[in-house]
Length: 352
Image (tube, rainbow, N blue to C red):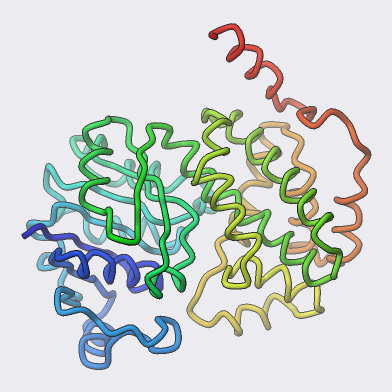
């Protein structure tokens, strides 16, 4: 029976463990400390975060890295983006070919501004780099735990690697499509978190669905422009890992990033919001800082990101900033400083 290792006892890590075990796989869920592993093994998943779901018999919780990773067909890293490098360093000496290395994190590393697949590639043996995959999509874990259907995308450079990962990770209520644009899939899942914070602010301010729809649409265009500048196809952003994830995260009160924006618009401080989130992480907060920095280096116009950065890091008033964003003087929808979206579409037209 195939074995899958999940690194990280985040809600997403535990949800993926639950999915894989329920389809009959042997699952090793790796915890950071023996105390954490023992607590989960004895008491089960966190009842509040995990909706009272019981640990399936196929899951073994351990803090022993060698035991967790040994003979695994795939290792899924479901950890916060800012701890990805630390976690991959902890397990890299146990990774042996032909293991699949799957990033299930959605963020950029502060300081380096690198995507998670880039962080992993820097830390693992060169022979394993072609086995790196990215899992991303509209995957609100609470709905998945209820057995509701969901879809995701697995991206890898080589088709055989993507197909292996797709076959291994597909579950009865979790369908997976394949992609080869790793950059686009990663950026879609990462950048939508910024827009979700703004969408939460709009809901908190009571600006209505028309304003929210306009904001999300402009946000998608901004996401596509940056993705193109960073080497992705902007068309990938119209797929599950872009538009799909953007809709789910901006529309749902289950989204942590939406929660952050909503609470900010209601006058809560970031410290109060972090306390309310507890052990959960809003990736959009750090992603906004990383993307703001990237935009400065690329001299890329990103009006939404730049303004949300002011709210999160400069203490600007959410009401004033959202009014600014919604009142930006209209131009052509694809026009922006150094966006190059026009030239991309012209190239695609010539290819046809």
